[in-house]
Image 1 (cartoon, rainbow, N blue to C red):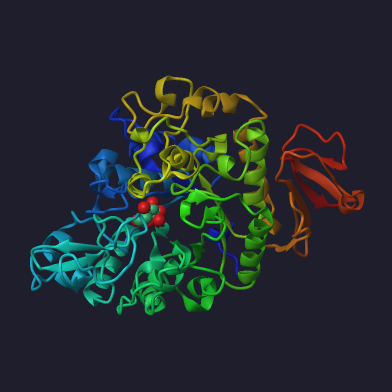
Image 2: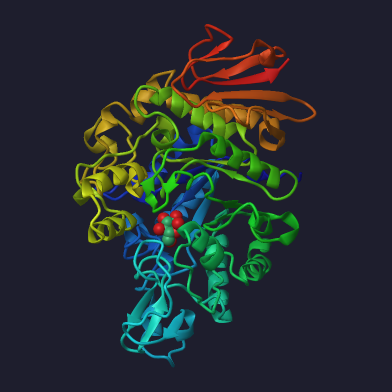
Length: 551
Ligand code: GLC
């Protein structure tokens, strides 16, 4: 396994709207991030990934870009970003940006031109289909509900949008489009940024026959077989790598809806020269029921472990994994995979121990380091996220029981992870002196950075400990992995080892007290624990996590 700085790094993801507002307009900004750089550095992480901060009408909170080379004024504009890049580097950190090039905003100049006429030079930047106003070209459904086709009166055609109707998909078949994109990438890399997280990059190559999907196919399969992994995706990624990425010492991570164990390696194998890592969603769609995300089912823990094991096996000798449990598109990890009530502190510590002891580059999402939880706003009126609002509309049109649906929103809405960062006990949790764009979670008086800094047993201080432990033990980065108890219904027990060291890691993913066979820990010393001490070696407590090192 080849060693690289980005394999040994730990990434901290910032959702800028909700991180820190320095101007008082209620929206987080770049200066806010600059104010908090010492805090970020103190966690022990290496790379900051910032969600999109470019010009955007904000229909999808910045994932709808209207100008790729301008930073949104709300966030502080290009000057502020230059300053951030400089300060990040002075602190010995790195910074990666979000690259959203499957689609643009409908307010992007390219699209404004494209929709004027079929002869416009930008027309072919997007994907069009002839038809009649009420006859959709095919039956495809958008990721955010409704159809993927929107009628354009001027040219009497439909355009394709896999996300909202304000996010028209770019036509990667057009070499001019690809050239533009590579020049955008080059623009930012030459400013000194250290890489990109590439939004829904698995979707860029379309199956241009646009065949109907079978009626009974699950959305997951539709994604895998119809929308993602198109015939030219690897050709495009190789070209992008050759034309621009390979000229810099950077890291790339591709967001990969539809990427699975069968096709995953094609994106990240070293000899393929495409991307360094991908985010797959096998474990993050694990609780989606027959009707999808807003139809959640209980988590199958054995399957959960199996996903980590299979992905580790797949990438053990080639490519590289990214290890994450949440981000700005999913609920809070402690609410989803832990216990956000009685065992919030223990389970938050357990989850980060899992992340820091698996093979791959670990990603931390802002706020998880203090165990921020899901938010249960009292009604839909408090929600902001377009995906949530569209799902709500669709459910009410379909006559669903809306009070049950509100429960599903409480569990699954993307806004769960988008509430403002909880800095301190002041008004609005110290996030803003104005009115926050989305209400702060009411629990901020119990859960905030300033209180946890003072408490040596806090989640925050545990994060620092386990992060530095990982940094000191390359075995945890590169070492082999084996699940020792794949069928245990509550315990996740695995080994990490190389020629120098061996670790045994035990997590109890339940509220139960469980017995532990004495012999399994016999030749090890306990080095990390999420409780104050061990009272009984052979009994593992609710949400207890232990890391042992061989003697
Ligand atoms: C990705 C982003 C998500 C966005 C979508 C469309 O999944 O993470 O936030 O809504 O792409 O760009």
